[in-house]
Length: 350
Ligand code: COI
Image 1 (cartoon, rainbow, N blue to C red):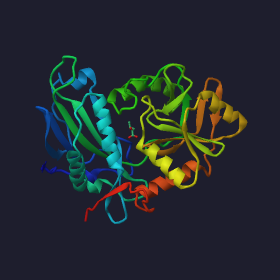
Image 2 (cartoon, protein in one colour; image 1 turned 90 degrees about the horizontal axis):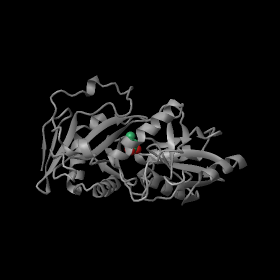
Image 3 (spheres, rainbow, N blue to C red; image 1 turned 45 degrees about the horizontal axis):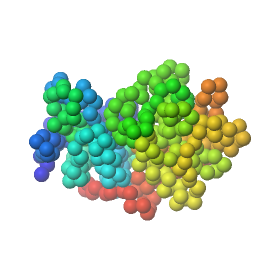
């Protein structure tokens, strides 16, 4: 049973949907559910807004927190189409397990999403380019600064209408000093601290004029892992190549979708180790034609350049496989193309 307290003052009519900087605009409602005495309590949906929390809440001190990023789209019949949300629930619970956080039940997740999205469906526009970015997250909320896993947690979902994540061309630099993750660590999980730890090296790269770094393995900095918050892909000799998953790489749902779409389109995909040397060599030979990133927030994102020390590889990004994959993914997500994979999950609004 979900208790709903509708907001009294909708911000819908005062929101400028033509100006949506990523992650800064939120819908009218949010979902809150608390874990106490070994079980998740009732789900509440209320007006989006600030809330009070103890300064001793464990999340502030030990970073016990995980999140998901997922998207829903609106089709031409005004239905909401969730994209592969079962995969988000699976990954949320894998992340939660690694961070000693109790798993969310599928009932809380699906019923909560359905109720929240029905209430805020107007925040998801059907016009081209729009989607609603859904951010479920769980954090340790017990007021206790002993260094141990918490006995209390809070699960929340907030919604952010969105268009694009990046609007400028993407220039990447291969990271040679800092690491995102190491074997045995939490790199495969969507743990908040993975992102917090990435900001300092990313800011150094930004100061040099790059958009993001390409993360490499923590031992030798020669194996390519991922880039910023995206999985990374290369087109070498017309073959799509992406690093194979390990416990140091976040397994993207967009990454998995692009693998399946590519195969369906008759393209060859290789999930394998890729070294920095191989990329530079392929570029020198003229067989490295494209590079792109994949992620929920960015979808399929063409990369304009990759820099490694004195070498800079540039991509023209004209008539590419990248754009073909992006279009295909988007038309499935929007319900324009036949969803032969069964990835979309329809919530009827009217
Ligand atoms: C996503 O693509 O959902 C991400 O995780 C990126 C996010 C950190 C903005």
